[in-house]
Image 1 (spheres, rainbow, N blue to C red):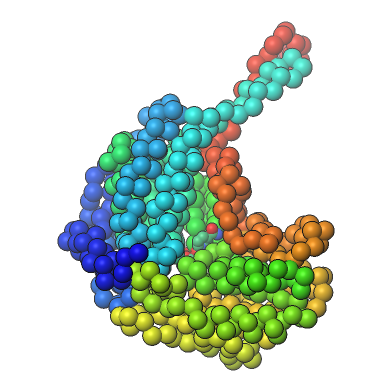
Image 2 (image 1 turned 135 degrees about the horizontal axis):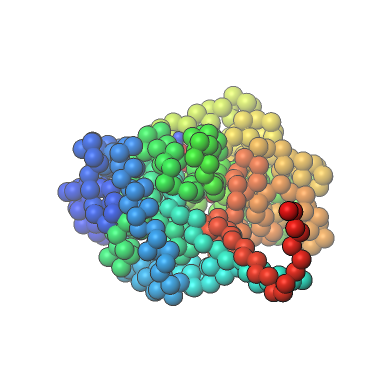
Length: 504
Ligand code: NAD
């Protein structure tokens, strides 16, 4: 395994190009600065030094990108599914070939540790391969013969789509949204998050070098309230696939109302992990730790509320606290690091404020509880565990999106379900019990789009991914992705000479 020093040296090489030319937009197959010539600077979460100078797109860049996507739409939609499959597989090959570079850039841009990001490119490539293989059958609907009519249902790409992504795991999420759009035959305008835009520019460059025709995938960098909002309002954009905060999802709906767009929203979460006394407690503890302290806790499906049966609560949380204290916080490129610096001082401040709120609300800090030391002195926060919390506290209700876990006891199965559902969110839930009957009963009552029983979050690309309540609208994965990116059309053919009512 390479050392931090070796990784830092390589990272320096990978960032040379970014330092020299900055992060540009890509419209109609051409790399370009913002039309206004304006740029914004991103910061390294490690040492808060400037990291990249990024094109600051606005309404004019979005308009140009939407027009390029509209112009490219007919030819891309008309291309055979097998040809689209070939191109998407070539993109996956090219992603794999640059996997190390992507992983390193993602670590530097987001602060996520290499331990998790080393798989980012490979997972991204897997997304492309999965949807590539589905491209040839994407248009296939149903053939339904009925009395006197034969119905043939087909699907057509909905048209140019806008994809807006957040900063937490930008590479993986961009591939997760864009690969099915391309497989369905849609052209794309992508607006990545302003905190971590680097790998989105690498991704679109890879795609075009791999043979994606110009204009099929356009990238506009910029701020949410500016470039993002314009994308949601643009009349040539037919649908918005958005991943981000619930409040932003609500804003996007309002912004896009006049142009009657279709939405797919993957939003926030405050996901419960419920541990019954009869569970395999060691595995449950491993999963609880993994689901909140991996990816810096900046993860929509993180298990941020730990609900533990009262009879084992003290022992379970005490053991957990000892383990949390040993989690290694450090430089993202250090192979031993689990928790790296949080994305940005603004987000670090938010997470630290929540730690303060938890103290004021009367919860006990069993581990962590403030800033941590780390190389470079950046946005390091100690993995934190709150115990003796109640579900009405803000630390139990609001999405902190950092390495902060809130542990709450429950006395009965009914109370566990009540607490789990007592939140505005409903993305994921995790359930630990050795009682099979109970696992069916409880999972049936939980208000969440995805539930894992006796497991951490393990993603299968053909299962539906998405949330209920304030956690989202719509599902990704398998054919669900095509339902969003395609319009369903039914054509009914008369198979005989039936009687048509004569009105005159
Ligand atoms: P955010 O909502 O602040 O920003 C997400 C994106 O939306 C960014 O690109 C931003 O520029 C853009 N944006 C902001 N305002 C906009 C506007 N008015 N119009 C159009 N676009 C706008 O979210 P974030 O802070 O970047 O990411 C963290 C959030 O994302 C958390 O709530 C997390 O749970 C959520 N998330 C959800 C999933 C999921 O699958 N459910 C996955 C990852 C992250």
